[in-house]
Amino acid sequence: MTVALTGKAAPAGDTYAAPLDAAPLDAEELKRVRAARVESVGRWVVPLVILVLSIWLWDRICVWNEIPHYILPRPGLVFETLLTDWPILSVALLNTLKITFGALFIATAGGLGLAVLFTQSKWIEISFFPFAVILQVTPIIAIAPLILIYVDSLSASLLICAWIVAFFPILSNTVLGLNSADHNLRNLFQLYGASRWQTLRYLRLPAAMPYFLGGLKIAGGLSLIGAIVAEFVAGSAGSGSGLANQILEASYRLNMPRMFAALLMISVTGILIFLTMNLLSHLLLRKWHESALKREL
Amino acid sequence: MTAMAQTKMQTDPNPAIVSLKGISKTFSNGTVALNNMSLDIRQGEFVSLLGPSGCGKSTALRIITGLTGPSTGRVDWPQETASATEHELSFVFQEPTLMPWATVFANVWLPLRLKGISQRQAHDSVMEALEMVGLAEFSKSYPRELSGGMKMRVSIARALVTKPKLLLMDEPFAALDEITRFKLNNDLLHLWETFGWTVVFVTHSVFESVYLSDRIVVMAARPGRVVNDMAIDAPYPRDESFRTSTVYSGFCREVSQALHAAMDAGDDM
Image 1: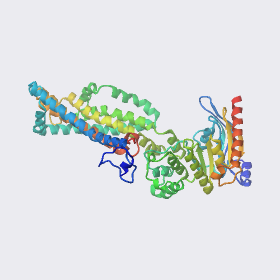
Image 2: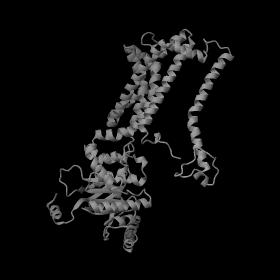
Image 3: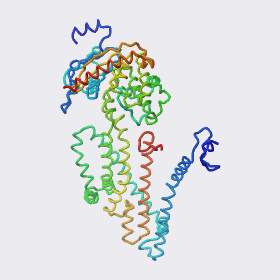
């Protein structure tokens, strides 16, 4: 056996033993392989165990302190409410999702389009960048009441609020990315007589991709936050109401389990958006960008 | 174009492909990068611009490409009609300067793509260029999967794919290890002998310039200028036996002395 040939201690029948034609693994290498495998499993198992333990602790705290369910419901009750109130909550979720993804879509298109416009003309950037900054730094909760008054349609005003929050990271990241294309490559494009459009299409947009995706990750979370905040400010009930309205309404009635259930749905939605963006980013960058590459140790 | 230049073109068996006339370049910070540089690059030559850093050799190259304009003087292309907007030249940078998001094939395709040639139409030219540098089987790889020397080869293939008349190289092998550099030197010479383009090669290595060139233009710094124009009269093909020959070391000594004379002259100023 190749392992034996190294003369170092290797456990008999070890599953990591190298095939005959590969370089023999010595004890240290085996240790490293095993550590890597433990890490890859632990990466998933450890957070899950911690999560389950926390939920169990939450449940125990309710029981030990005899906390009534209208103050802090037990996790089991929250889950039960989630199922029994599903008809109401799912409609609310759908409404919130509509605003979130609508805003994210407009923010992506708008942020990307504005970024391209900004990098094409210095004067456009100088003229309009201050507006983008003003929109970004003014807290949405302060502008929302105005928007709700001025805009007739409720869903349109919610959309505008969520959009204002979400679009800035995409804009500023994409501008940074479009300007960070390699200078020698730019010279090369100029040398070969590339048009403005060709330089944008083949050089600046691909170079901006990692930055844009970074912005998109932030914007994904922010559009959900924007949608929820806007719903809170709007505070309306009825056909168009979302998860935030459910939380508000439940709080008036001290319906704690439903509040927690709605909160849980918002969190899970946020996590799913985050994971989707991560996956998208990974799929688009895995072939070439440093951030998506595994380091060979 | 003057009548005199035209007669010269007809009588000269080896006409100039590009000629720099009284080129000076002063940067916005006041540095004089080039002072009154005149140079004729003749067709089929392998010219090295050799000099210490700051002698303006890279600036001269950039002025030939048109990426930088000279402060005074002009660049003539005697063989091209006045209407030609683009010169048939290619540029190889010190870094490979590849697009990391594109495959080797797409990187080499780029110059043709920018001219509106589709992938299908360009396929044969691209593969031919990759064949020349021995990377045909790597056409689907990404730059990060290649070694430094291989990336440089891709960069050279990209420069060759347009079949340029003039190849400008700005210290292309400076960042590579010696073994790879020797190998690429040989490959470059071989391609040059086969296809007969004109090469302008910027380097700060005496040994590399003597090995490759049939003409070495020695430059000095502060201000950047041409101080010597030397012919290397050794027959091609050159190979490893040339690299170890006494003829080679003789030339190296000569060029080295010229370079030191230039640097001393620069220090006196």
